[in-house]
Length: 104
Image 1 (cartoon, rainbow, N blue to C red):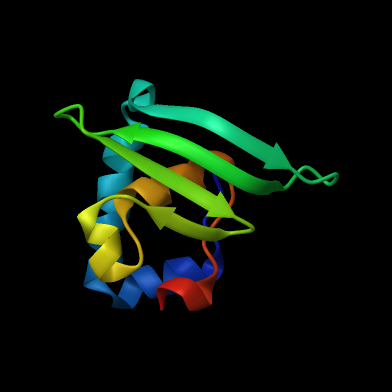
Image 2: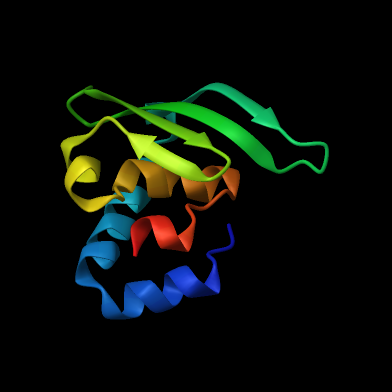
């Protein structure tokens, strides 16, 4: 897993992003809670469209979608903050990260 340099710098100075990244690590420790529902790659092998179902410890389902690196999630945290642990977990699994302009 490679974290983009711009994201690492953002984590250094933004406590909300640090917290969100820690939450994503919890999801990665429980691989069964993350299910790829559909996805499409470009000819170069980069993800173009992604749809993951991510399940919380309480078995609540959150849908994470990405269309050309524009991410969305059905959780309340995303609606308020434009980023969430569900999205960051999917980003780490797929190597497809949100665009910097969409979360800063």
